[in-house]
Image (cartoon, rainbow, N blue to C red):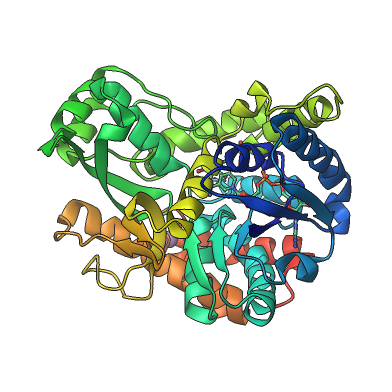
Length: 430
Ligand code: NAD
Ligand code: G6P
Ligand code: MN
Ligand code: MN
């Protein structure tokens, strides 16, 4: 049987991954699931862990749920380690959203300055987790879901010996939506998807060997299709979409519609609150539900969170590696030459072939200039963010913001100084 360790087990998303393992039990017999958290999150772990226990009993599968604050015990001899932790919890996220807004700059937890702050807090923790994996479970796969997922995956691949794959639900949603737009079975399409995490383009949608991207774009023009709950669904504009000729991901709105998104964020902060503040309320509601001893399945209300379907992605991936399936996934992996305009050791998000050896990105035919400029700029930002996070290097952090397309360069320094000052408890490297 398999042993899985899930770091950040107190997450409200945990019922998703538990449901994912229950559904796949026949092909993926998880005997021991360790849910790991820290003192700060123990109350969450206790509530969601008890629900996980009830879910497993209700389903009648032989899976032991272990709740622990001892990460090393959980990692020892694990086959897979999954990560879904949030350093500093939602209060830190809300700061990531609000600090940039003070400078009239996009305030988002993964994209732009907020993403850098989150990366700087997360990198020391992921490096500690990887030390434990190297020592206690050197053959384990790390399936990283913790944001910023691309930067964290790149950090692990550059600075540790751990086998790591990064995940995001956005490509999964883009796949589902494309199939739905075409009115075909979701299993019958494959996307040619390429870019970085939260900056990924759907270059093509292949149905029965035929390119369907034009049809998907044509139908996206008229409808205003929601992808994730956490990004305002501002229309792209027909000219923009037609000239792009590819399917943008929802996060592209921060780059393609910057002013609209900024105005929307400013307005939201004044009225309903930032996304982090909204999620705080959703989370309180979810944990109230989770406490109900009669609840024995994943509740519908979890769909209010932006990360829905992530566990399908995670459990499918784990099963493909374990069962040597040789099927297709959309993953964050080292580039290794797949995209010729990016460094080999950068993390890319790409259509991948997965077998027991891991994830292999499919080759990419040369990308057009309309995407390489933005792609290379954000990739350079991400590499500098990794340097800054690993070494506590102020100059790299500053240059990361200076070159970031969403940060007006003259505010980079005061913005960075605020970020460091207000996160200093979580920045041992600085
Ligand atoms: P959350 O605030 O509920 O945090 C999850 C748990 O992590 C908490 O119980 C917390 O106590 C715990 N934690 C914090 N520091 C820890 C540490 N050092 N070790 C172990 N546990 C620790 O967060 P959430 O909303 O469930 O999101 C979790 C993470 O997953 C975030 O980083 C979020 O950005 C990410 N996420 C990613 C995707 C994706 O597409 N890749 C989708 C949704 C969420
Ligand atoms: C999307 C992204 C995730 C992100 C999540 C936020 O699905 O892919 O990376 O963490 O939304 O959702 P939330 O409900 O926390 O705002
Ligand atoms: Mn994501
Ligand atoms: Mn800049």
